[in-house]
Length: 88
Image (cartoon, rainbow, N blue to C red; front, side, top):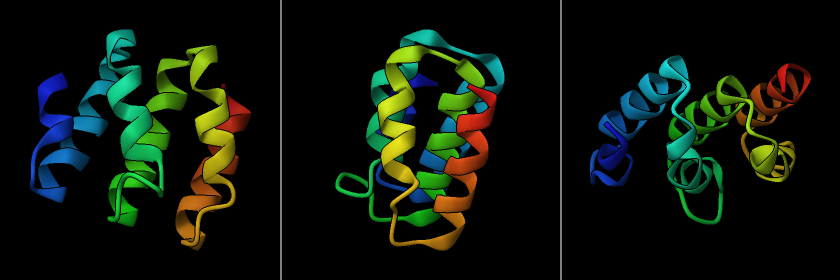
């Protein structure tokens, strides 16, 4: 599933993020950090899923990425990141 974070389809990337977050795969933090970043991921739904997954994994190294997502251009990503930080 980790390899799917690099898939060309936003639907696949989002599903991969959801799965990795649910399974709390610590080895996926790097890939999920890319998905949660507005600089690296153009699809807002994927960014939102990436941030949610990072919050589920609760790896301290991901906190700066989730904090950055609170400044995302998409309101839903910002809201999700704010909620995710409370869970981390």
